[in-house]
Length: 406
Image (cartoon, rainbow, N blue to C red; front, side):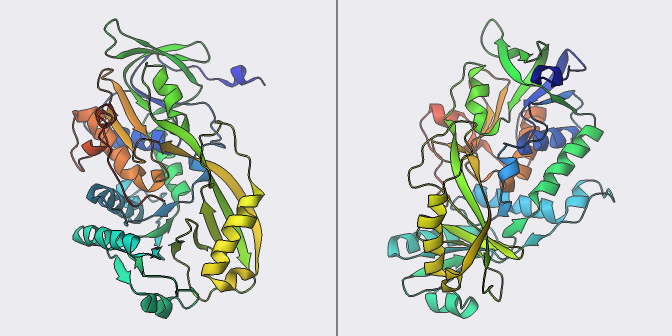
């Protein structure tokens, strides 16, 4: 079957909201909209690949943390933790919805110099003020709780065992899609290839699909992940989001650790954590350019020359390990300030962003999906004020700086 033959035709010629991209963010926004009693419009989600094989969603490591340097980012993750732990309640106590938990082994940021130690201390004060359980640990305290670490080069560590670690993001994603469909959202296998603006250039009037179909729309949501700028350009908008390659490695240890390994951010930039009976490690490349949207080629040298030496140095038990799986995925990397881009465009008023999450997407998706649905429904936020992430900061050259970016 040809790709064109696989396209589906939309059921209507008009939708109140057209969401471009049906992975984690497209499904989150669709579900929160459809679940909002004050929203009664028609929703279309257009996704070109219903297998989601090459999406950031498919390559997620499903981690969650509260260790951020900005209060709003901490609050966003706190809502995510509540949402995950109370998933069935958020789905109106539907008995089909599973009970999820967070594996709270926490993140362990390690500092080997005083300037970074000071950053961790400053961040910890912000996190604690928000109710997070982050603690600053001396090397002796780290060694006491986690004897397998090498600590002689460390100044401090920052660790939190409350609502921080791993969660089952794929189940959350699946239920957003399933429930949104049941609530009337139309998921369409097709591709948005163009948009037509009104005469004033102040709104998107029509979305053009690869099948040749055209639909008029009230609002358009850009949920295109690493391809966000390709979608925004259809409306004449530039966006500082590009695909950056990130590498993940799953390995087995000849001598497994005797307790869970926190998601450890080593001073080298490598991160490593428990992953069931195995361990997961990851990193960016030393040279980190934008890559082609279809480039998922791995680089074995990164494991051999960068990752393995770093984790073996930090955890000597990991001298004897065996690589069992690996993959390369894409961050939707915001080159401006590595934070989300949300809200309406300043000129094309009905073009809504949920883009540029730079690796924070899964853990931020409940709060960002809810907030975007509020903005579409009410023209304002009714829960968390997400306006610091709005697109206008890019036009005004006012970065929203987050110090705790991995």
